[in-house]
Amino acid sequence: MPGKIDLSPNASVRMISVNTDNVACAYLANLYIPIFSLEKEKVLRRYEVPNQISGIHFAHGKKNVIYAVDDSFGLHVFDIRSESKKKFRLNPECENHNVIATAFSYNDQTIAVSSSTFAGGISDVRGSRRRQENHENVISLYDVRYPTNPITTYYKRHKSSITTMEFYQNGNVLITGDSSGAIKSFDCQLRDEDNACRWERWTTKKAGISKVGIINKRIVYGMSGREEATVFYDSKGSLEVLYGSVSKTENSGEDSKHSNALFKKPEWCIGLIKGVNDDIPLVAVHGVEKETLISLTAINQEGHRQATPLLSYDGHSGDVKCMTATSEFLLTGGDDGKVVVQIANFKIRNSRNPKFGPDSLPNHHSLTLNRGKLAEIEDSGNPEDVVKDSEDVIPDSEAPRTPESSKKSAPESPKTEKSKIEKSEDSTSSESPNPEKSKIENSEDSTTSSESVNSVETTSELSKTDSSKKRKDEREGDAETEEEPVESKKAKIEEN
Image (cartoon, one colour):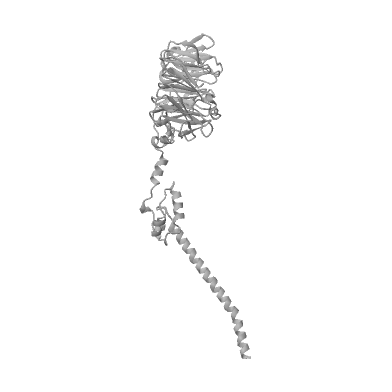
């Protein structure tokens, strides 16, 4: 490890799950579920399923048990120690209704299922059944111990197809994303949907959410069409958008500035994983279309990407379809039927452990290098750069000139208007002539206050001159008073 595990020569890998023993399972497009070891890089056994699988999950407490949900509400339970498998119907009234995404709670109690339609079995706050009701874009919750009936359903909030969902690490809160760009969070302990919805945001790009993910207990994210990452800090009672262009209502304006974590085509980003430290909390898993390499690039707290990747390595010959990460490993699955395993513990790289893999490849695509700066300036149109460009040149009509100042001083390009005023005061205080009233009144607009400074200096010089003259006169007066007694003595001597 790291390495590649070949699961199928002709079927793509659609989803992956890993248990604590570094044993993984995957779902292939040819209706097979292989079980394989990451350490041995070997397939241990295979299961065949009759329908397309919409979600597959290892149990967190029972590390040998796999739960898989097919697209017609069938729940398949496998024990990887044997060939045994069981199948349940999650909701008998919903057979053949299309399941799109699933999530499995960390406490091994709840399975969340999103479906395009849901008929019957709608449970209200009191748990009563209201049959003969059809709803679209529904989230239904099931207890894995009694999976035949839903605990409750949420069908009001999402207006578009729910494409992705994940449980928080506490096992009770669910984050979802849909095809309209909406990201929502639900407290699954509450049956009433209006009370259960904790918060909701809409991406201003209006691109479908391709993936939502959990970084730790409080940091979650959503990917808009594999192009832009929106990261949230979700604590009790408050939600902070760390970066990303989102709004609080569907049709309102933008609430936060654009994310600098942009991946403009032909670049793509499959998701984010936990980063190196507090200064670099996130790492993007990304690449370039029609290129085989996968790059891991650090992102800081403001969403700025580092200029060069932390690591690049050989990936898939086709499109990357899925990814999952543990505290130690990063797994990606692709159209080529392979799973690529890479070390995701960056402390190992810092200690130069050879297992981490190659730090670079000889042939990088130009977009993977210096892409952080390009993303800020070209893609997002960073307003700070626009301001800097507009302030680089000061018009001649705005800056007062004198023969001396035009020879000795030249206009500078400060960062802000305030620093511009301060610098002009320091540079022109000793070079400008006596002020005029009109120039003093317009000094703020022309970014200089040299005349006012000069007037103060002139006044101080005059006051100094007057005081020195006064002291001189006083000294002369004192000398005269001292000479008067001498002359009177001479007169008395002559008279005698």
